[in-house]
Image 1: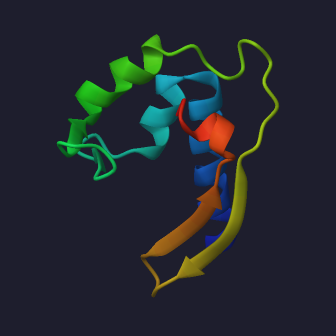
Image 2 (image 1 turned 135 degrees about the horizontal axis):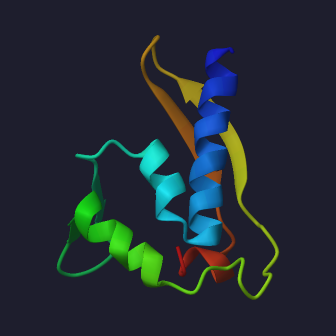
Image 3 (image 1 turned 90 degrees about the vertical axis):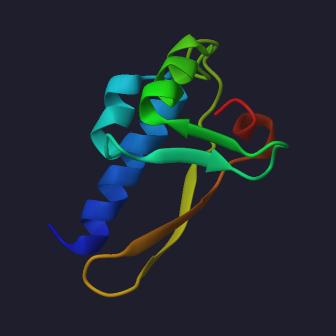
Length: 98
């Protein structure tokens, strides 16, 4: 499997996990010590995976009312052999749920 295919596979699993609110899928793509953080909120939102996964598990998934998928990988940029930056966007009406 090429690096591009490997990163695409991980991002697809991430999107599936968010769409289905499936923490088992998300657990496959996040390191156990990963941090979910966003500066879009005041104060800064900072969660460990142990804090974040229960929040995801309690959400009504976009899949349950059969909302259409809108996740897209727009590009993947590689910075050396060990680093990739998948660039994606979600439509505004779905992003607030994930």
